[in-house]
Image 1 (spheres, rainbow, N blue to C red):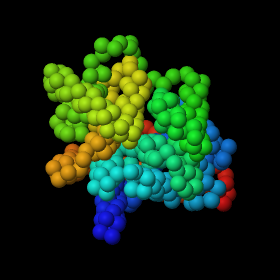
Image 2: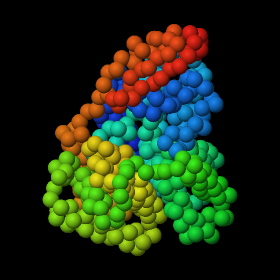
Image 3: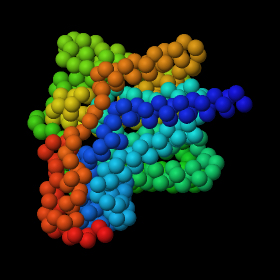
Image 4: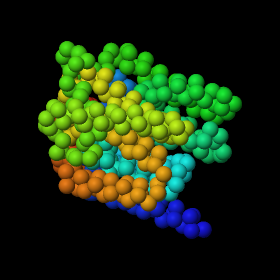
Length: 411
């Protein structure tokens, strides 16, 4: 009885704390919702002009099924435009809350581990680019995969199977989540084939994950490139060292690690690399499936970012240009550290101090992010009446273009 009460108290505590941190980091998302990037320029505009026929439009070479589905549903329900940014924001919050529920309901771990793991999702000290917007909801979908594919192979209820299947499907067709993890899925199939191929539900989940990942690969191939920078590629580019160093050092020291001497980056990067090797050895010794999937997921996403920015890896900076690229490797690294720990008194104190450090860094160094007020409500009132309209949105220089909008188009 005490354990059940403890589980409920820690669950609701993590939920309330996570929501509070979301509000602290993006207060304007609640008080003055604004579009961010693609969710306005593409998802909203395409749904406005084309309705459900825009559902499988590509963006940067990828399908973005989930945010486009939300945009199309909102349009079909004839929601007044002034409320649409808020609906997009709260949809992100719903997905994020679902991820917290998955941590507590599906993860085979003690309550204290679940508490720390759930908090780490939102207090990682990076800027708030991925928070409260549909443009970057793909980065919130991806951690679901770690939980789903590390859960016990026998899914006991149809409820969880159908939830898993829907999440894997949307994750696979919303951004690069399943695409990046295709090597991991194939490895798991090989290592666990005697268990997986005796479970029809697991076969379906792996088939959908790999299948949607391949669909995105084909889409990217037709798009022509995954490059985010230009220039001459060389493995000796010191930007790769900087990128690797930032990935892990930023968690502990925030902006103080920017522009440190090269020798410091080299020494710290060697330490981080040895720590990763140690973690894999400990995971192997423990036969820790969750730890292996989490750590491998983070490294694969880091590698995918390094490939995309290989012509100028120094372009990635955790405080400016590459926030979303640092999120998943950071979260999965912390998840691995937490999960493989025994959670004795000393470990609990250590991780409690780490969470407090993240809170302090988030408050002092990251702070609150407020998008510029570009008067969406004023522009939204003109959408139905204007024949052609160019509406400024965040980030600066982005616009929604409304063409040939009819007065009664959404009524």
